[in-house]
Image 1 (cartoon, rainbow, N blue to C red):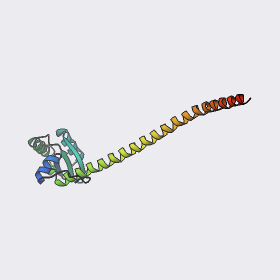
Image 2: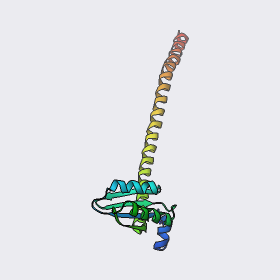
Image 3: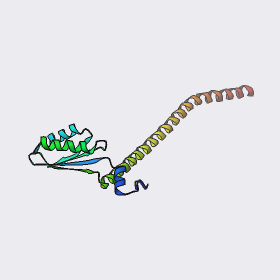
Length: 164
């Protein structure tokens, strides 16, 4: 449920396949490895990979489902050989169900932000509309006052002449 609305129903595998955004690669490196070189190697050979986080001896990538699994494993095995002994091991997994739920929560937050911004815009437009109406009314009053005075003075002058 997101914002009180039912968003998904199904088995764990169905939810991962439908709402998950790809695969997760976690590289575990040795202590002497240059993490930046490993990161650069993976992102150059797997353009679909985005770096999620890196710390100590772990590098976490997210990879779109557009890449074939054999290509991903091919790149990882070549990296393991070419950059030896930098990579101790790696894992490739589907996104977790937790990742799917976190993405739903992000969408809920984005909807809240959108609704708040939409309300703010509506309020601003209402204020601008009211201000515009007052400006038009003030202009009309400035035009009408001398006109009313002129008509009123003509009426008074007529009565003066008709009384005499």
